[in-house]
Image (tube, rainbow, N blue to C red; front, side, top):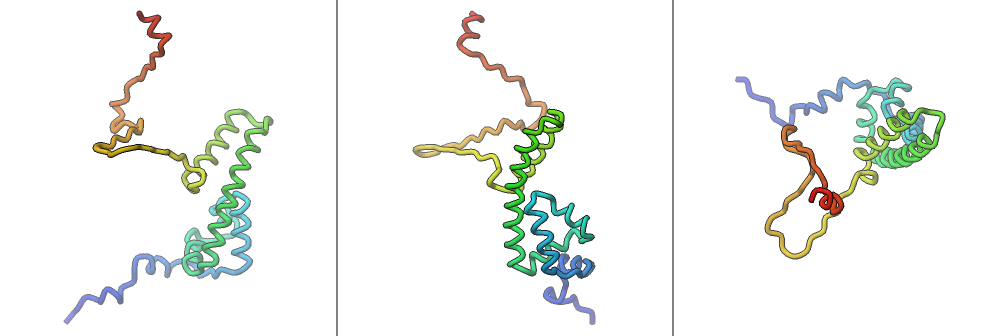
Length: 162
């Protein structure tokens, strides 16, 4: 009689995937190299390509080594600070075209905004009393057809219209 395997006997998708990863062990040299690279504001992908490391291995190492995981988080934070410094350096470098500087700085700021909460745009909402209905205005239309031009009329403009 055939029976289904017990759920605890079955490998999870992650375990099945993990078995096909190369078995490069985390050495002190690899960890030091990776953390220094990240601290300098460079990308993990660039480090992996330079060192022939499979894309999932650093995540496997972090899952298995909490000390490495904490050091990785610290290195990423330092790297983000370095990226912010790079934004100022790029903006001040007048030897490059203004458009190129704008793109390079903008790209770094967008990466920082999505990868580090310290650099994300913050919204502050205050209210007093009780709330019967809360309306959040995002200025993002539900459908593109709903975008309508907005004209702001000042007091001086009203005088001209009258």
